[in-house]
Image 1 (cartoon, helix red, strand yellow):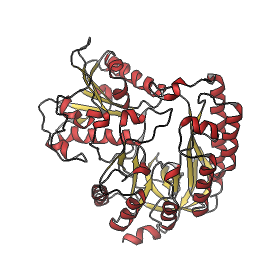
Image 2 (cartoon, rainbow, N blue to C red; image 1 turned 90 degrees about the vertical axis):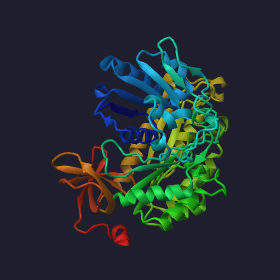
Image 3 (cartoon, rainbow, N blue to C red; image 1 turned 180 degrees about the vertical axis):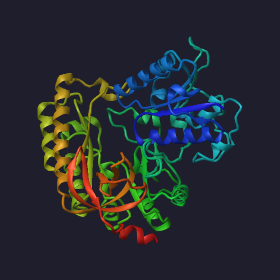
Length: 473
């Protein structure tokens, strides 16, 4: 029996796409291999948000071709959409399938297989795309190395894969459901709108059905994600708001815990904050991208908020949810970023109640306006700014974790890390280590006694989490 392996790079949305591909291969009768070196078909589901992401994909292609030269290497995702010819020139690549045609990847990899299964995975009716099977732009089925390329206009793309995805180390806890794809923003540094297309939402009833199915399968916490999640519903007919989605999940499903991934600052309305704060069924965790604390840099980035707007949002979230984890994405080295600009970012982050950062160094992306800006920041300067913010992030995280020593936190068990301990994740997004082996997917209350290796150390209390578990007994 043919075997396959799917390797995902990048964000939760990419991982969700990969989970849909994985599921469809298995529904077609293929078996999942344990590693790329053992698979007949290897799908690399790529990211292209930085040059390093592109390099990671190229390195993986070379390694797989070296270790498993007989495998059929299929490259899909954002890098495939952006640079199909570049990828097709690499030895071992058999097919390049962009995001535009990812919804029919299994049909393309296994010619002649039925499309009936595919239609059950998508957000659209199973009728043929108006572009038709052969509408591929550009089309190159016989390049130098006989690589097939399937890339078409991403802005004509309307299908949305909606399969849940699971962390590879944690198959029975916290599935991630992608409910939105694409982005209508045009940040000057970002290539994602050009490889993901317009913002597209999974219909409300389909979201609720997917969550009901996950609850029926025994899952207790679900993470909803998207490329620009806060814009969910704006493209539906009639239009809906992200707040409508959250309220519907709470009112119309029995999901015990909902966790929300990244939401842009302008979409954190007072109403949304109130919904988060007032429900014990929503994880107290907010990820709010910042990018820069400099007004001048934010304007050059074409971001749709100013530093004082961001500060107010974070302060409102903290006031409503004092124990919440609040994270941010921050970029250093954007063209023209001066020492003064960086100090504004550092000072702002230092003063705000943020609890962790994802720090990135600017990477020029072909086709974006920022590549034409003057004032490139020297690599060594950008690296030092990155280091400084990571150190600040570590200090903030440690202080936040330390504030819970002696208190009791709610968590969901993940898996046993060894014979002597198990891992869990707290409601406010902290890794928790418990003594002994505990089954996954159970609520616990734990008394926090210390910190070690970036995790809280806790002792499980005898009583379960009554507030959540009894609510759905």
